[in-house]
Amino acid sequence: SVGRRVVRPRNRGSDLRGLTSTRKHHPSPNRMTRPTEAIAAYHAAMAAGRTPEAISAARAADAASHKELNALRAQPDNAECFDCTARKPGWAALPHGIYLCIDCAQVHRHLGRHISQVKAINTGTYLWMPYELAVMRAIGNARAARAYRNAPPKPEAGAPPEGER
Image (cartoon, helix red, strand yellow):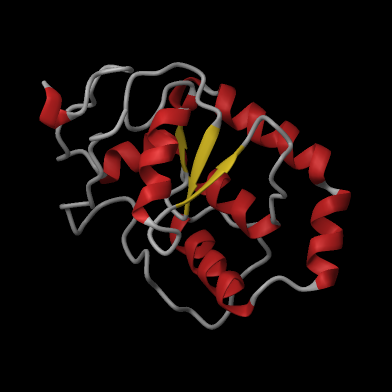
């Protein structure tokens, strides 16, 4: 699915206002409900790096993390890829908090990790940190769709790249 659309919010009054906020206090990832708080905590944690203790705690919670991600993905709003119409997406893009199919995850991967980090949610291959789970809990496809409501329509799953149509 090369050539999928990747757009930024055009509406400054969107649901994701303040995505680049750098607040000094970041609440516990388990108590966050606002996207701006979850994204700020994500950026702060990424800048600080992973500690051995945080990695150990994430490993201990790995099965529960993947169970929660699969439950979030099973919600009706997240059951379709954010960037196309593929059903049951198995990937997530951070810090966007969206669920993607494998083809669209490849597009996001090629954008670079500084823009979009993709991780599998249903294979158990990737270790999910609490601040990453908080982003997925706080945003999801429905909230992101409201932020990107002025974007072009989604292509059908498996559609050829725009240059090949």
